[in-house]
Length: 420
Image (cartoon, rainbow, N blue to C red; front, side, top):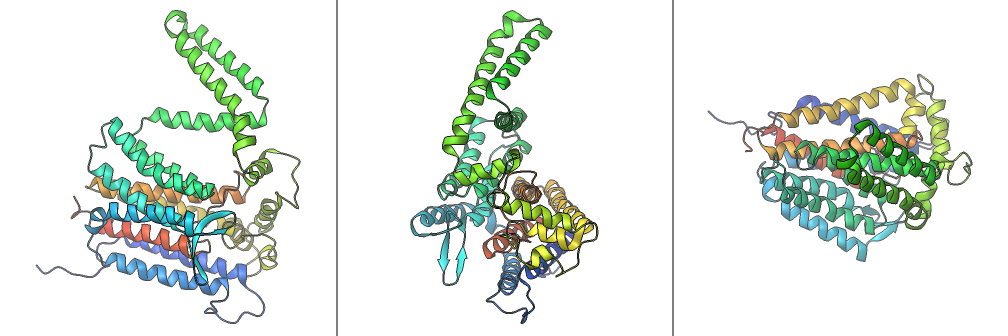
């Protein structure tokens, strides 16, 4: 029986359809942020909507090229791609240019490219290749340390670029390691507890928190009625947590950069300079709130039209959605993202190969982290850390990197019966 070489055979059409909706809805909102009364066409590449259209078209061309590849190329060349990206992350520290306080970019003519965006794709490939060639479903320290090294290496280079937002994105891969049995569930609980204690220490006097921990420890011992066997473990845990609480003040005041502290203070302090560090978030919340239920209409957003929100086409693109499309449009967009990410996880679960499954989990984790953090920060629910909204935010590096990740998964999924 003759095989068909149609590249769209067996690909998941609903997933591709959702991707296209997100991409072109994103372009429409980028267009809105730069629209003026002197508008002179879609293809004016001196304006952001023209450049974004160029980025979208080139991303789709990249996607078609990926669908034409042999699926076995991805695991075969995963380490080479990973090594190449690591080399670029190192090179950008020496030869890159600084944009928005981060030395994360190579300047090529009038364009700038950000290697750290592509490092997510390379890390997902390398992690999937490593874990698929080991018995990742059974816990071992070899698997754990190897996987952590693969994730930590690009994180180390990116944090040297002073790009905390992109660095934190890699933390989402802990969900992949947990799902594959590489790390134990209690590590997730420890991480969540550490975050909670950090936030509480910024809000409450540290000695009150230590006293509360002491009360909890004593109450636990009384309820357990087992003083002889567990007191040493409980005492040790209490001391570790107390030292952690005491260290928060040092980390916050001496290790964090001034702009990072300012972003946290915007959320936890009632005394924020709305014309200074709190300006972006304040204007973003005004834009979202002013949209009401139905929104002001496409190209009718006053906050958008008069450029009240800095970075509105990039990190704060969601406030344009909230202002012009309102509550209903924002809700539909959030629902679309959740269905899109859920579909990737569902497709990953059906893979016979662990490579395809792990890679699918990895890009779903990246997408979910970006989606949650970006929308949360525009609404003032979490600190502003400066990461784009996938497929919507303006920027070539972002849309190219996410499109490469997406089309690679689409290709792998279409050949899931051939990739073992």
